[in-house]
Structures are given as C-alpha cells and as structure tokens.
Amino acid sequence: MADKKVGQDEQTTVTTPVEEQATESSQPTAPSGEAVATKRSWLDRTFKLKENGTTVKTEVMAGITTFMAMVYILMVNAGMFSDPFGDGTNLLGVSYGAIYIATALSAIVGTVLIGLLAKLPLAQASGMGLNAFFVYTCVSSLGFTYANALVFVLIDGIVFVLLTVTGLRKKIFTAIPRTVRIAVPAAIGLFIAFIGVQNCDLVVSESSTGVTMGSMNLLARPWSEVMPLVVSILGVVLIAVMSKLKIKGAILWGILGSAALYYLLGLTTGMYWGEKALQVSLSNPLDAFKDWGTQSVAKVFTDGFDFSAYLENNSVAGLVLALITSSLAFCMVDMFDTLGTLYGACARGNLLTAEGEVPNMNRAMLADAIATCTGAICGTSTVTTFVESSSGIAEGGKTGLTSIVVALGFLVAMFLTPIAQLIPNCATAPALIYVGVLMMNGVKEIEWTDPEFAVPSFLTIGMTVFTYSISFGIGFGIISHVLIKVCTGKAKEVSVTTYILAALFLAMFFVTH
Image (cartoon, rainbow, N blue to C red):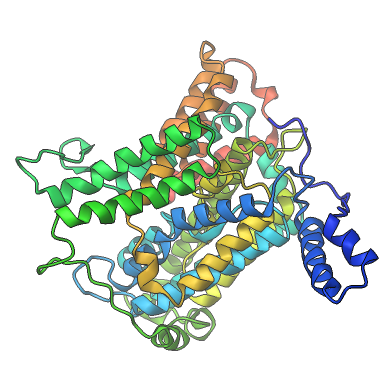
C-alpha cells in the first residue's frame, strides 16, 4: 500500500535554468528557450510528473512497454470477428480491416480519457473474453446479428455511465470484501503470466489435461518451432538480470532484446527464404477505413434494434430473456474486470491512496464507461482496462502521460498494420510473465492459516486463472466469503451490498454460464 497519496489537486511550479535564462536574456535565442520551458511546465501541470516522482522519459518508456504488451489485441480482435472459426467463414459480415480500425479507435478514446481524466497510467481496449462472448455466444450460439450484439455493448456502457455518475459503482467496489481485494493483485499477476505463457506457446491446449507444456523436443519438432519458446525463456531471464542490476527500462529492453534475438535466430530457421518465409505486405490503410465506414460505424443505431432475424426462430419472450441475460453477463464481467484491474495495477505500482483506494476512481470508471459506449458505436465489443497496463507500471509509469503514449501507439498502428505484426509474441510474452512475478508479492498479506480469509483469497486467485476471467475470480471470492460468514454465525458482518453482489454473481453463473 502506498504511503503517499497520489493525484492530489495541488500543482507544483518548477523553475528551470532554461526559464531563468529566457527571462533575463535578451538574446535572439530566448523565444526558443521559452517554448521549451512552457512545454515542460505544461506536462508538469497536467500530469504532475515531479509530484509523482517520475520523468517524461520514464513515462514514455512505460507507455511503449504497455503498448507493445497489448498491441496484439488489434490483430486478435480483428481476426476473431472476421473469421471466428478459422475456416474463412465470415459469420458476422465484417472485414478484418473494419474491426481493426474499430478496435484501434475505441482503444485510443478509452486510453486518452483515462489518461486525461483519471491521470492514471492505464490503457483500454476491447477485452479478451468479452469479445469471445460477443462472437461465439451472442452471435454464433444465440443467433443475434453483429449489430444486435452491439446493442448489448451499448447497454453495458450506458449502465456504467449511470452507475458512475451516481456514485454507485464506487460503492460496489467498497463492498468487495478485504480478503478478496488483497488477493486481486496476485490473481491478476498469475493471470497475466498465464496469458504470456500461452501467447508464446510455452503452454498449449491438450485434450486429456486441458493444457500442457509446449514441446521443445528437437527430435519431434523442427528448430523453427522450438526457437520462439527458447527466445521467450531467455527473455524472462534477460529482464530478471537487468532488473537485478537496476537497469532502467528493463522490461522494455527485454521486449526489444527478445525481438532482436528472434530475428537473429531466424537466420538459422529459414524464415527469410522458402515457402514459409516471413512476409510483410504493405496494404493501403484507407481500405480498412473504408470498410469500417460501411460495415461497422453506427451499425448499432442503423441495424442494431432490428431483431427480426432473431424472431424468425425465437419467441418474443425468448428475446426478452436473452436480452436480460446477455446484458447482465456483459455488465458483470466488464464491471469486475475493470474494478479488479484498477485496484491490482495501482496496488502493484504503489499508486493507491493513503486509504488504500484507487486515486480518481470515479473518473477512471467514467472513462471506461464512455469508452465502452464508443466501442459500441465504432463497432467492437466492450472496452475495458487491460491487465497488460501492469507491464508499463512495472516499468515506472505513474501518470496519465503513460496512457497518452499508449494511445499514440494505437494511432500509429492504424496506419502501420504490418509494423505492429513484426513484434512477435515470444518477445512480448516475457514481459507479461515477469510482471506476473512482480505482482505475486501480495500473497504475503493473506492470512493463510485462517480458512475464513484463506479460502476466498485462494478462490479469487485460482478461479481468475482457471476460468480466464478476473470477474469470475472475484465472484467466487465474494460468494465463498458470504457463505463462510453466514455458516459461522457472522452474517451481520456482511453488508447488504455484498449480499446483493453475491446474488448477482449467482444469477449470472446460473443463467449465462
């Protein structure tokens, strides 16, 4: 927990030698010095860099680190929407380019908002898990159209705007039991590390056990397939060594070093020649914008409320039930994913207030709510705060300037799709794994010898990873907390709001999963 409160209202005016020179000197070069001083003062006033003990260089490096750790969402989200089953079937009727642009634009809006409104070093984009629920459940299983599903996302955003402006969303956060809250950072750490090992194929799917270690057997697999796994492992070691030596920017240098090693070792794999050679094709970004303009933007309004296709095979009662349950699922998952990430990431970076709360929480949640509405209008699934933001915070990011750098990265990526794809997963995975290591230190605060505290904490951590969802982990933690309190005669110690949260999670589990 932080000893110093972050995000206070006082402003610090810094007088630099450049400013003094600009004031006293009448030389022709003075205007240039004034311009530089003014620029620096604006950054200090806006993001309170000096007050938060950071610098522009640190914030920029943190922003680049976060961007590199989460830029994969542009390709993954576009691929999932345009070809959900990997067989060329365009179930949703939208192109790769349209969703790529929609994902990038909503990420830019959400990330800029959380940087300017909440002044936090966090980034937002279409959430993994929520995008799968959108595509595979709402459209593929339930039979809604792409535009219909966007209505659920819009409802999600509007509900969150109302909860935020009325202050209810913050009350919901405070109703989460302490035993669950202290477990959230560790849960996110293990979760983000799990994402990392999967992204680089160190952990792969397996029919009998669910997952297993990716094979590194050179007698069974070609070196070209084993090499990326080796790069990932060496990348983690590289970051650890640089961190131990207190080298600034260890995580960012780890990503760049791993990428360089990947392409260097590529000389031994044949990736630069033959049929499977690395290919980078420069496409006209205007084509993607054109597809986005005709296939995605504002479809939630023009086509979203037309449920005639769904009603051809379902009753009106079925439509109402599907609307309620799907909206509930979107709202619950988005809310607790965001709350969990906000608390976990800020706790890891010692950004919590003296009272142990997320600074500017209402503004951060309002940014999330507006970004979700923007995502629905742009044509993508729910926008949420990304756990990968923790990588930038671990790199030293402390203010909203980190977020602005991330947003600029997404802006550039809209026009340089092939460049974004040049950062391999085996280079970003080490950063996620190492951040997972850093975030596990919170488990020492858990009272493991007392089942009343240990079980909800363990379920929060375990179920976050096992179910691939922060919100599900929090749900199991809250439900177990309530049941243990009730069964041990301590029902009065549980607040009414906590009982309501437990009931909502139970309803979600029983009717949507």
